[in-house]
Amino acid sequence: MADFVERSVVKTAIRELAAPIADIATFDSIVQDVLTNNPWGCTPYVSGSVSHDGVEKGAEGYTAKFLFEDLQADEVGNLSAKAEGVAAYNGSVAAILADTALATAMGGDCIRRAGGTQDSYSCMIKCHDPNGEIYYVKFTREYVTISSYESDTIVTAIETWADGIPELA
Image (cartoon, rainbow, N blue to C red; front, top):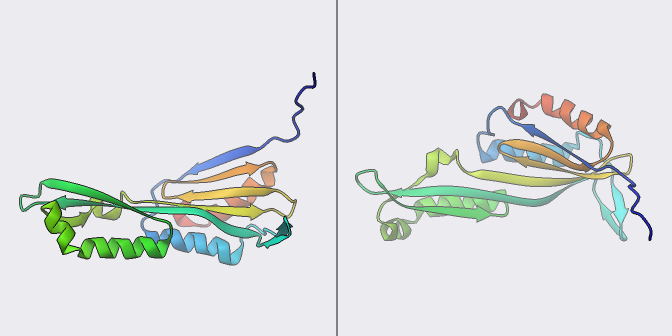
């Protein structure tokens, strides 16, 4: 019977942020900077006859959390709304806060839980390194993860870039 032979070593690295990213606008600006400026020098590639950019946005999810308070400031209900994009997240937040029928049904005023600081953000970016590797960078409010890479130069490049972004300290 044949044995399995290791062909590669796939790694994961995580940077826990000193403080959560403050808000959706800051989070989105970091992600958009990567997509627009390609700070890691990723290269376009073709896979299955389909052309891909060097960096591409993959799965993303944004969750807003709300609570409903009665006149005595007691919590009488709560709500979470998950959106698959920043525009949908922003639109959902505005619509839920303005929905007086929902607030009446819940029995209290709708407010953002902890002023929005408990909301969660997540965006995965697929990257193609000049060495041919495909790897992923996942951004959340609390950490950045690099996964499915082999070459340590990938982590070095991303770490150097992240060191220049105060929100990613």
